[in-house]
Structures are given as C-alpha cells and as structure tokens.
Image (cartoon, rainbow, N blue to C red; front, side, top):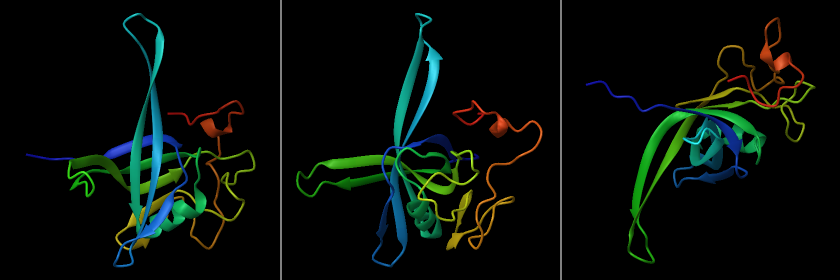
Length: 168
C-alpha cells in the first residue's frame, strides 16, 4: 500500500524563529505558523478558522530562516508531519505533539521595492533544505547575490497593486 506524509501550508509566523543546536552540532530552528481558512457555516454566515502549527527546520535552512524571517512574515512551508511523544519529567504524565518538519520555506511577502521585508540585508528566497544544507530551486538565486524578487511579466498576479495576499 502506498503511503504519503506531505504537508503544504501558507501562513504567517506567530513568533520569531529560535535557533538551537543539537548535541552533535546540527542547527534546528523552531517557529509557529498561523494559517486560516474562510468558509460559510450552516447559517450561511462567513466564518474563519485559524490553525496554529509548530514548525521545525534543520541545517542550512534553519540558519536562513532565523536570519531572514520574523513574526508576521507570510511564508509557504512544505514538509512532513512528525509525531513526538515523551514523559513529562516533573509530572510523569505522557505528553505528545504533532509538528511539521519543513524541508522547503518560501518567503511570500514582498514589498513594492522587490526586496524581502526584513532588516534590509541581502536575503534570498525561496529556500530549500537538502541533506546537509540548502540550495535555491529553479529561479532562485545563490547566497552570493540578492533576491530576484517576485516574478514579473504579463499575467503575474504579484503585479496587481491592491493585492495583500498571494494569489492562492
């Protein structure tokens, strides 16, 4: 039987990423993501449901995320679900948590000047984690250069001036 463990989310960071290191020296970043959906309830009234998700990313991706993202930034996260369980040391109770381990993070909120909206340093997006680092997928730029900005051209929804959210 085929199995699939894949997650794709678009949302805003609920807190700044925190960078930690394992005992073996591997970097891991942790951040929260809020994602919402709008729907009509049984009373035909518009409703909104927000889900909060904990995200982890590793290696070079963790470094780039911590360096370039902050609370409120709009991102795409691709990865897999991971279920963690442990025993609370103080109470002895079993605890568990479902989180997303990201292997792809793309920065989606671009200001009008075409540069990522953070502290103004040369950042790059999208970012994709690989086994021991990261590399930009097709159309991305290398860490040695500034970002290329959102795609341009006819029919590009990013060029619409009143757009607050991405076109998906």
